[in-house]
Length: 485
Image 1 (cartoon, rainbow, N blue to C red):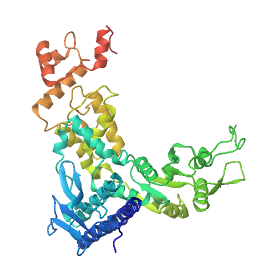
Image 2 (cartoon, rainbow, N blue to C red; image 1 turned 60 degrees about the vertical axis):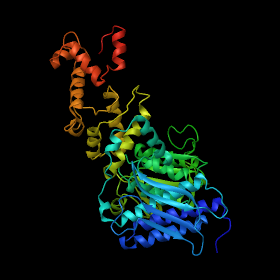
Image 3 (cartoon, rainbow, N blue to C red; image 1 turned 135 degrees about the horizontal axis):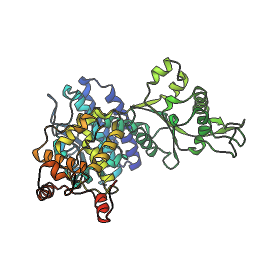
């Protein structure tokens, strides 16, 4: 029997539970079960909302044999008007649309419910793609449109991306990780974030905290690899005055600071063995002693841990306690490396540009296709952190409104290679290199015009045509009559 009026909080809770349930289903889904899973999910969304009809349409990239539209309706109910439509899109291509019928009480869906429906619509696309073998190794094909996007378009893309903190991207692997966060965040379960360095483990830890009931309390971060072994215990659990040389005052530890909140232990695989034992006790009993004290203290902390180590191998080698590993590893979330989500690189590049261009006194409106192609070919061993550094270096290097990679000596060959670029891009690159080598001198000894075999006035005309401008910091040096170092 359909509930006449379902409270909005109840709907939100039901939709969150569905997202978590079907993310887990996706991870172990057999391709032959795809149709049944999508139909079941539509029916459960309809029950959660209290509506009589839903329709999910596949707009593009439909697997062979997959129907263009899937409709769920409650038997014998009249067809209601569509209350809202939730699109699923990657870059400029729309993949699907979830259309939801009006509820019985004719109220409008608030933004909280719309956000949950968008997650579920994304999940339906992932489930359908899961049944298509083409998507096992496929990448989004329309990256060229992002290459010529204007700064205004980039701003709009960033607004959409930051709905999930600063986790930028639309790739399937990243969406699954986000949905895993939404599944576990409302609980108090311990979480382990597994991924290479630079994959954004702290961002995901913050996402878990701010989607939990603890979001009104502290989020405390400790980098276990950055602390010497002699200080880690005091840093985590605090110490009493006189507990050791230099302990001139009593000090709270990070566990006490994170009481009723979340403690994020980064690089937990580097914890010493004695600290692992004390950490296990906190997780099991919720109590600990400060260094130099025999008084037990109670604490209520949700733990999120992260590591780039293989903890299974560390346990087998005896470097990490097996009992602590099983206590921590309640809900692991694997974060994909950047090389496995290359389709996210254009949005990430624009995100870094918009975040840093004001501080660097730059304004970029385009990224040449050959620059994006070079960025997407690179394996990125440092992941997003490495990409951010490369983009900032390119912003400092570029003098016009288009972003070009720095080709200074010592950089990897991938950054210096621009084969296949347009004639104008190659000419701009050649002139900028000559100007930098001559410290932007156009006249006088060692000037760029002589190096290029051009008359100084011809070089000025080419610079104006290509939009090449002298860096402002050099212009200041020139105006004050100083000699650049």
